Image (cartoon, rainbow, N blue to C red):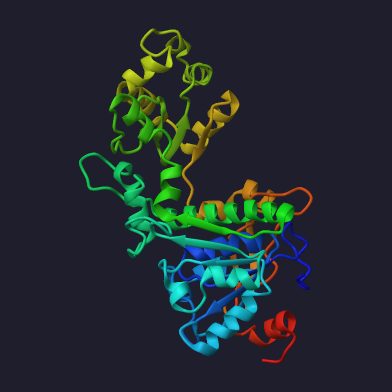
Length: 387
């Protein structure tokens, strides 16, 4: 059992994280947010490359992805480092890694051998293409998984090359599915005492959220294409111009569209055969967007938002980080939290989600500032010996 007293749902669960960059560490972040004790094994001196990632003069991404973690410096390429890793893994409930398949085996950390020593061990293995199949040995980053899984091909405008979403969605999806698999495996272990392997592939994590793209093609030969800010046949749902910016309105349901039409002072649109039904609106999507855009362009964002709130139409501003920091709803729900930091003084970042009523997660400790700073503490608490 952990002695850190997290109070979260996973208090008492020990995790060894061996991954680098995004996919493995984000899985560790999620488990740590829910109360697990995360011991991150970092390469000596250099540490995880995420320490240098992010934007601005002083990148802060590490502060988010390494929160709630303890850093232990371990050279996994050396025999001494491999021995220490095996000792720590023997005391763990979950091991996370996102190296290319075969790397653990090359480092004398074969999962089958690790589970002989620790039969209840759950090993989350995040990789580009999975642990099996003809592509498994290939190098794979999140963007490659997004392309193969179908995401990149439908993001952007039809007359331009595929666009990037703006965040590393392939990595974080694979990490999230890895976390979900670990939680399911913990439930299974609670019934049987048996651990298992969680195999989370980047391209499959992306594929899982691709809605009906495959089934539409299988059933009717239809391929979804890049369509910019709209989804063909789903209207109105778009970003519309205002005097001082853009505003997103989603009124693509008959009753909601009727409320939008009334707010526009055009209630007759809801019964007009050109717009009355889902299919009719979808067939005249561009025409309808232009009509709505002419109306929204006469107002400021604040004026339009007031009308949408009053009418009960799903709508919202297109936020950036500055907007989030100023929004009272974010503050009321602790969607953003401020964490003390030895270098920055404090850093504000996203909070812990989802929110559990009985065992809420939390940011209990800041990201480790230096590589290996917690080695002595972890060795004493986990292995009962001095560093």
